[in-house]
Image (cartoon, rainbow, N blue to C red; front, side):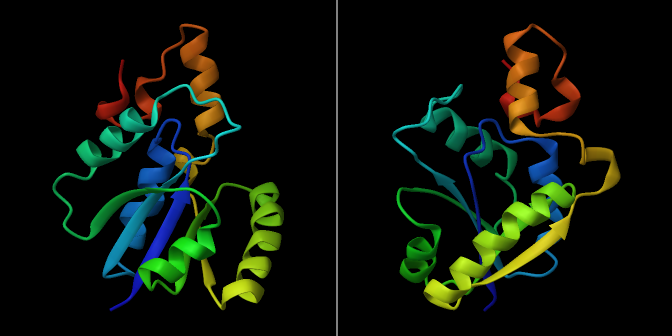
Length: 150
């Protein structure tokens, strides 16, 4: 069985994340959407809300599992017996950043990173942009799944 971990903070989950996950379902038998917890980071949405947003978004998809974790993503992969980390790329800046992490993960744990390029209609969306729009009272409805709408 081919399984992958899709790690992130998902603060909030966006249509860009959903684009990558839905397309990756064609490649993997199971995808674990892993919400990373960093005690030093300030989140807009609580961990419970972020998990609920993902659970509601993928409620009808049996190949998706939602979990939370602290520490290294490779340690989660070892614990879950997963050989692949799934990542989305919006642009060349994302690739440069993700390449170093992928190479480190491969050297630490023989974990392969699989990159999917975002489709053009969502490549401009990031969680940080959505948070800024929310903070400033803008219309973010087309950027996130229904479960995120406040």
